[in-house]
Length: 222
Image (cartoon, rainbow, N blue to C red; front, side, top):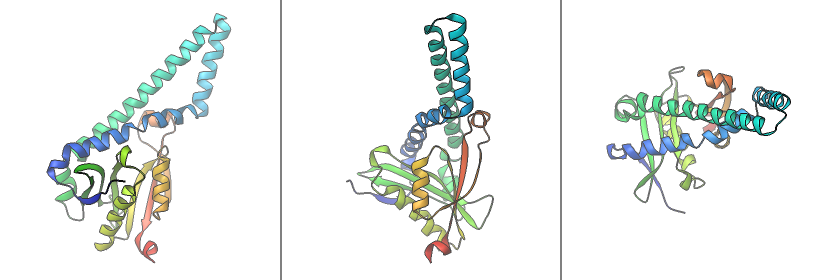
């Protein structure tokens, strides 16, 4: 197991930070596709198309081909949704880390470094919905370095930062498909406080929900 250290972001980390985030988000595409296939509406659509074409054509080839094309189109739709989200994040803050997470008060961006390479990231800034909370953002760890306690260490850095500055707690958003992240947050003392549909039209159609978690620091410390 390689050693790692958590430190503040430096300008020379920029490309590696974007790579860690982009690859990490893209890894959720397969699980998102599986999430869609578990939805009753998707199963009904595929079943209806298959049965209708099988009945009308009296051939197994046409319905199989049609279902395959629908599945391929669905994956393309999910890929488009994630690529658009990644691009939005880059434009909103990851292309401007200094201005977003280092210059304003009560903000910070950290990286986990191992053997001279950035292998994890996390950031925080005051939450828009409740200024007494910090919002944890951009938590990501390279697949090759997971299971080594890096994500836990990054979460602790944010909690300690919030506690030192007198914030009531830390909140964050994650998605329904990020089950490993949900387990991590719950292990770290976070509690799920709400669940709601993502604003994207495609996300609404596939029942892609977001979860809000909160860590109350005084309760957590006591």
